[in-house]
Length: 382
Image (cartoon, rainbow, N blue to C red; front, side, top):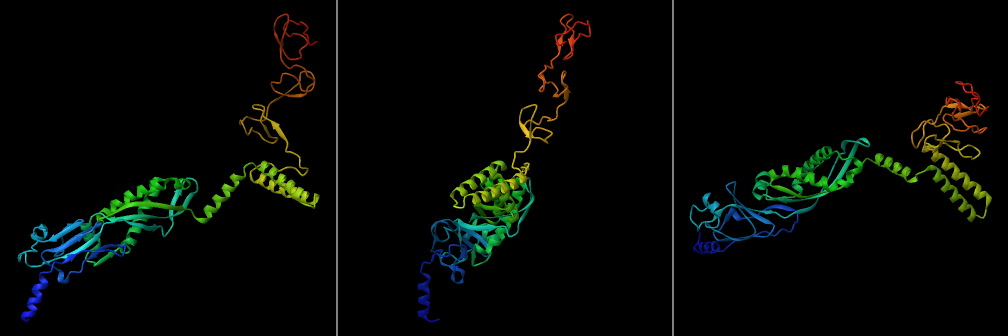
């Protein structure tokens, strides 16, 4: 080596290196700073920005972690490196070390979802298959542990390199939490926030060993299979229709209005009324109501003897109070007409059915008795 080359090398060795990293990728978790020959000159400047951490790795071991700030890399500033022997040739010799920058910011809007349906037992629908998706936020909580457990010797590590593993862990914990909480499928929408917090806590128990932390976890949607959703829509439609009789009346009123606007007059009215009654009759059958007869008259009814509620004539029990519709019959004491047991007057002849007492001996007389069976005294009914 010529004298001139030695002078140039000596001059270069006096230059103070600047070690810093500006992330332009927006999804890089770790970046290894390119140091020529892994040699860092004594007095080099290390700049660590907010949401970053610089990790020095010496001979395969994590030597030191630098938080945000500006540092001069020398023996007094890096005691751990000194202990590992980085300065055994004196402070004028370069330190041989790898420098990793770890991004400690939150990586937001990371997506997750179930690739296959989750089979669950539901109180309303029995066994159902659920799909779900959402988003979460992630950050490196322990840079040293992250390098040891995940990044290793990679020169660059991005979120997509660990995204698959994270999604599998999330879906596993989501399925477990959903099974443990036993929330009915129809009530899941009201529990998204509570479900997200429960899953986040479970995920962080696993991720802490990787030096990672899930800071936010969102459940955006949990959906049922299309056939179950279609059945729910039909059920909701039936509930919206309400009373079949009122629906039929509404249809008839619509038919009358349309007929009044139609120049055809009677023809339009007849067709509209026919359609209204036909649809109303079908709905009445669907809801369990009795269809009307061919003449369009109202179905026969009977009054409940307990509460007075009108019921179908064929009903055995009252739909309102549950009382028995059939009552015992007794003949009228005068004309023999069949009366309800306990009736006070005959509905045919008006005779009182209540028992009286003998005016002489006060013995209780049967309704309609003409003589007292005890003393033979003639009664008022004679």
